[in-house]
Image (tube, rainbow, N blue to C red; front, side):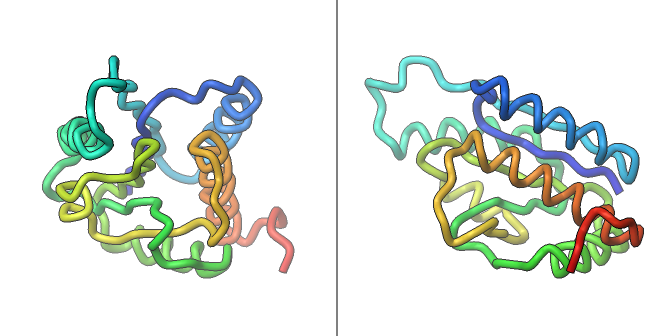
Length: 156
């Protein structure tokens, strides 16, 4: 199963980017993994939040194939412990051809992206910056891979 993370806007903080790059390199030892960045919109001061979500959503949906399993990282999604995420990921490995996780822009997702999504996951009930979510998610994906393989990274 191929796995991809689509995210709106580049990671500005070099420390977060270094962590994301580190975990991404680790993940590819367990499964094919790629990150695709949807460029930030230019001149957003003159458009509404809804228009921005719609424009970002169109860009996201261009990257998604009809057979993809699309999972939004969303505050209203299902919450899981790391062990549960590993079990969930293992199940998806059996059923999905390509698993696509999406981190939206600053205002969330457009209705069209929500309509296309197969599932929603929440990393926490706490609110994190978009920069931090990227790092937390890649670490949790790596952690899930090590749990599946029975490696000693995770301690329960």
